[in-house]
Length: 301
Image 1 (tube, rainbow, N blue to C red):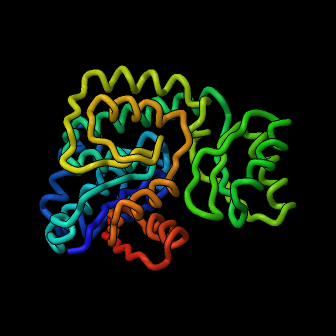
Image 2: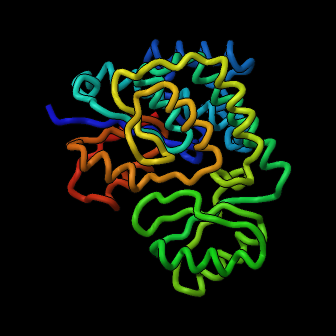
């Protein structure tokens, strides 16, 4: 069997109507949403299936929705392609998806993971409300040119690289005015830009004190050694030590997501097959920009 890695998506992959066949057709997946309702105090499955979009897209709801939906899709993968689970030797998740990867790898329980994701979303939303900010994708431009855009846009406020996703796809986070300037400057230089529908400047110091709030919640959560390495967004390296994992989850709130480096590291470690598990197919697209020859199957929620 090929050496496999399972990838989990992050915030932004959600859409109203997602998961209907999974929730209705898989008892284990439905049970996850029943447990989520008891933990969260509202019917998460109903929001996923019926919206409204404004509610599903809010940080405090979209993060639990993607986390739970990804693990529900994992139940489908277990039932339909058990060899993918048996051959899995590593896992990673984009931002929020790192929590899903840790639950899959046995580092924490579903209940603790969902509670962490809920508190993380609430803390990040509060930080975003305190400082009007946002995120923009810069497409068709490589990092040296993006660095020039950032330097020029800083005349109008704080801005920095937040996500290094793949060649030609870099995300900036910052003050609203600085983001608008970066869009204008990048487009003048020939890039395409997309303003992301997120609450604020994730993965930057503007998210303080969300990291401190998350650290306090993490103190009450048991983190075990995962049964397989989980690659961190912060340093693009595999980790199995609970103390390191705990520290990296806190740092992840403020630091850039090194997703391209994570994919390259997984490939260099000998991964021959990827599975993207959760809403959408964003991660498969990013992987193709890194290595067109590698296979990535999608188990969609």
